[in-house]
Length: 190
Image (cartoon, rainbow, N blue to C red; front, side, top):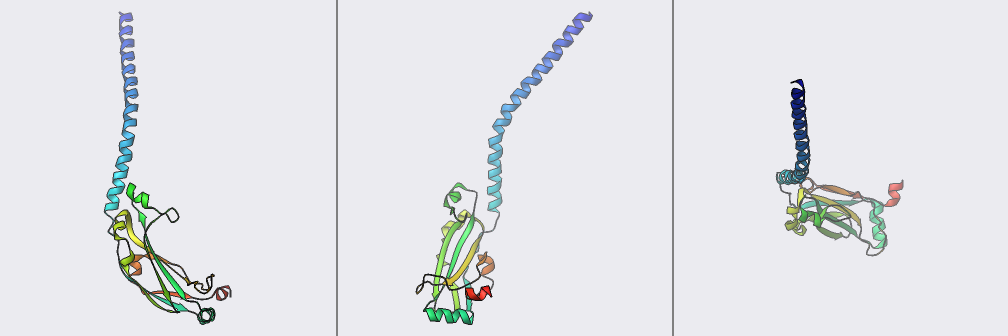
């Protein structure tokens, strides 16, 4: 009887361990098929999160450009003007369509550009009509605004002005009076 009890016990152990092995083997393909679903759900979660971000602000921006006395004299002596360029862009959403619009240099989606020329110091109003509003659906968050002021390079090919670079969201920029103070490069070195 002891032999039959041992045999039955061994068969039971083999059956249990055999089933456990099959379950583990079955569990592996299950996990492999769950992986794409997990990636898809992660993408869906990202898209859901992006949909909760408020729509981008579109607004006009006012900029006051000042010149040091040396910068003003240099521009006058060279017969040069001032160029102010406002560039609008945004962070791309996770959608495949948005990823195709990304500018490889900046990593952002370009929405528009506004260039204005002044005879010297003065105020500039950048209207929002240059922003491609159809592309704002492809960005996440606020529109980014950069303003770069240089000499216009109409009389000479070199930039004569040292001006700070401006970069904020359009929502922030539209609420402030932006002031960009330009000098000459010689003044910067002093």
